[in-house]
Length: 64
Image (cartoon, rainbow, N blue to C red):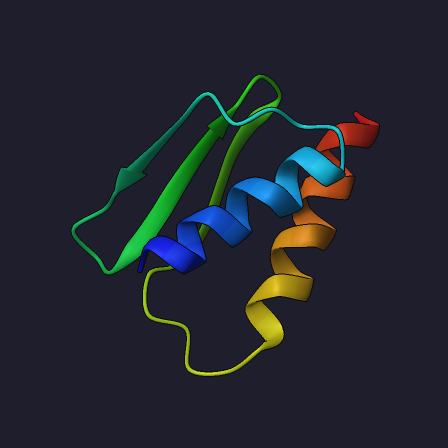
């Protein structure tokens, strides 16, 4: 779990979005709060697509 949180934070910061906070949701998801909005990702990813999905969402938020 900690590795995924670290990876999520690094992906967002690489796209230019600082992560202000991370909260666990009751639905099995993670909410990462950024100045531009909130990014949700799975807390228990079953495959490797989640990294690409988080990066794509972060890019969209960073663009405005």
